[in-house]
Length: 269
Image (cartoon, rainbow, N blue to C red; front, side, top):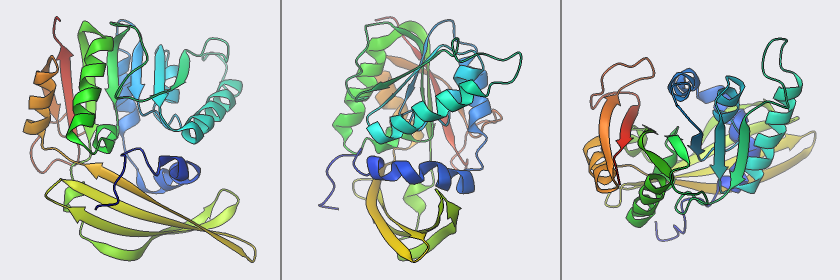
């Protein structure tokens, strides 16, 4: 674990494969959940770590006035391409390309580049806060989120709870199939640093095009806090936890839940 540098390292390299992998493995029902929540917002919504637009684009298409922020330029390039393509193909009666309320910004979520009290809701889907691998990274991010939120606004956080329970292994073939105009194979290794609550996935994508083969190798590291620990962090940053859910249908949370969803309210400053 001594090679760990920053939590955002690896995501530029992951960008060409992110949608391919998630199409096969996510099977998640998170987009309808975030869409229902975001449509309750009374103003502009911010998505942290919007990546390729997997969540932000459908929310904008549903009429949410949304800003997505991500540090990775390659991820945002793909998000922009998806947004343009989707807008051009909007069915009759839905929002047009001109009215699609989606703005994508490159920036660091630890220091959000927005005016105070800009957003009535902030979303952190699919474990994005777990990419903050140092305690000070999470502290800075929560403080920055609090600064750009209106008092009374909702902060929605989705955590992936099973990451610390992943067993360690080396060079395991996880996925294989067509993608990106080639045949892709994902070979994965997992390392745990339980003292620091860190899980590192070493990803090796083998891309085969005819007789040509190319390897793409990078690390993704995640830090996982339990719900009580995250709750304390939120309270210190000026939030009050309102609800903790265990799935995207709204069932109550417990330690065995597949996901941990925290909905917190921004208190008066």
